[in-house]
Amino acid sequence: MDTLNLPSYEVRTRLNPKTSLQEIWDTQRRRWVKLTPEEWVRQHFVHFLVEYLHYPSGRIGNEIAIKVGKLERRCDSVVFGDSGEPLLIVEYKAPTVTLSQEVFDQIGRYNIALQVDWLLVSNGLQHYCCHLNREAGRWEFLQGIPSYPELSQQQHPR
Image (cartoon, rainbow, N blue to C red):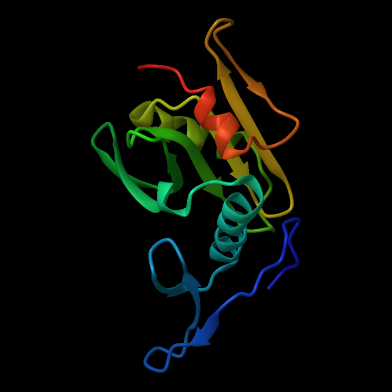
């Protein structure tokens, strides 16, 4: 797999004896999942959030089902607050995928359902985080990614 612009960690992979597919251990879902380039990014990014930015592991959900209009969709990761409210949606792409307007439109559609103030997209090489400035009524791109304490302190009541 590709080297990412994220800290490395002790990755657990295996070859599934039944399917002969390469798998990676998902610490959030506590099960083996198919190792794809996007999954490689997800696992490294979640590790980064937990180990470096102090996101509580138990507050990160992977592959969270949502309903957008009449369509069922899955958010790659959602970070939840103290009361179980969604705070941040994360969309992952493979390192070969350009983080285009289409990617931001996708995460924006997910936010119609969740109404969070923080959105983050990453292909493992580039990471973009934006925050809804409610006073100005616009999304603002940040220089970095907030720690969990910063994120949870700036949440707004719904």
